[in-house]
Length: 327
Image (cartoon, rainbow, N blue to C red):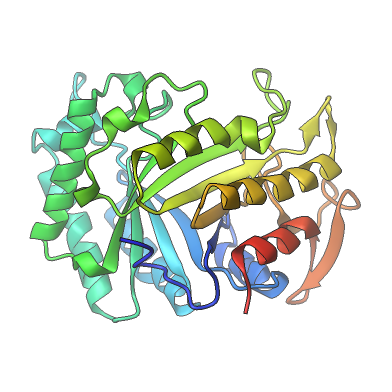
């Protein structure tokens, strides 16, 4: 199956962005005004332990606004809060049926939302980066391949049983780049009949962290992309990537600019069909477009979008238009 959800008439490679947690829609509109080609996908994150009222608003208002803008939401579903006993990981809780009611509520919410308009589709990315150590559903927290694949299939079947239309949802199985992770990721693969996309997340932290150093796109991604292409012909996505400008204890925006170009060219070489940029200054300065502040002014280029001044990396616009295509 190739790009059923999110199939674009204006490009061969889908372009996405995670717009951050504040002013999300304004940031999406700014990207649309800035880029030489339209966005296709908006990456989102939702924890399962949020209040039911927030869950409903997130789906019915935020996801609807994304679709109304002509974009496809990529819904990252993070099963936090399912550890209902001291010895139960979220994966075990799902497998043992302890949270069946909660899963049914999520499936029913998506089913109703999708049923309200034929324009609504979603890329569903549950329990991502399982080959790392930082999430409670990950191998680093004791989740075995058997447990994870069983959990995935149970989720898949629960959504089908709830009437979630299969043709409107693409399931994305997403790993972290294998450098530094603790397990061979394809041991956790549930099978092609349960997956529509393969996702690979990876970042260049530069030397922004005590434990990190500058890495080229090849150093971050190449080993993993080659391994994925050797395992499966499913469409390949980079739902999350970012690059810091931190190099030798200084900000080096020109180095980051070149990294952007090199990364998109590498993705093109390996047949990546969706690229999503993590546009939020979280651990470091991942952004390629953000409102001008005293912290960002003068280090890149300023541009006015929708009546507001933004600081931007022009090379992102240029290379995404070239690699991803434009109208």
